[in-house]
Image 1: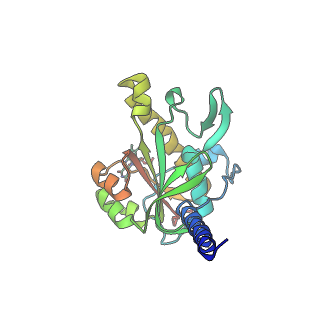
Image 2 (image 1 turned 60 degrees about the vertical axis):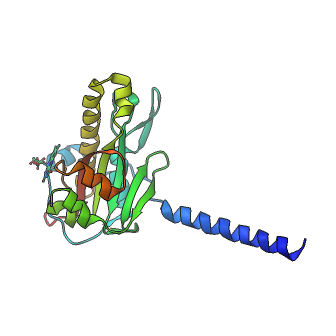
Image 3 (image 1 turned 45 degrees about the vertical axis):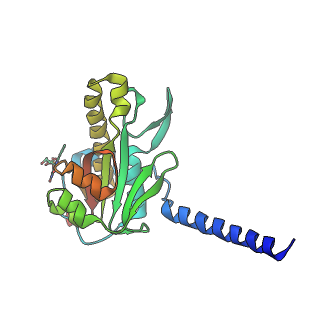
Length: 226
Ligand SMILES: Cc1cc2nc3c(=O)[nH]c(=O)nc-3n(C[C@H](O)[C@H](O)[C@H](O)COP(=O)(O)O)c2cc1C
């Protein structure tokens, strides 16, 4: 083999390993979800309230992992295949779950989409976007001060293509179930959360770099009360 071919092979190997490294850092692994709970379901329901003030402390990747799984992670095998943490009309599962990480130990600040099949994160944007996220959420301080936020968006056509206009109602019901899962899991983890429905749709889409229909922003963080 002449030297030119050898150097081309070395270059190709180096390029491939660099690309592999980039794609890995673009989709950081998160811990597998832990099905155990520190409190009973009854206790979680009893303690559920909206919490809008958070301590200036990080949440952990483990906590975020549990919250994302509660929002829309894979669960048991159902009649028509794998199911998720929330029930969905016709098994359409039209919701997309996203993470805004601002101050999360083990996860770089950025916007991520949760991939339920392998419980991983796909990076959408790098950097701390909490300030513009707060502006898009009509300047609500809870959004700007939380170390992380779970965001639920929907691909409404997935359900509407099956059920027509009635599908719009079903998507909102699906989102309510996912949202309640997140609030109860936050209680279980000793975190506070609130559901934010008041925001500028277009501004939010722009800030997140996403083309989906935004439904809910859920800031989460540690609170003084727990
Ligand atoms: C669909 C929906 C949208 C909401 N939007 C907001 C919001 O934009 N800002 C906010 O501070 N709370 C918001 N909330 C939280 C409610 O204000 C809160 O649930 C209500 O005051 C009852 O308090 P509790 O959750 O502690 O029982 C929303 C709740 C829901 C279910």
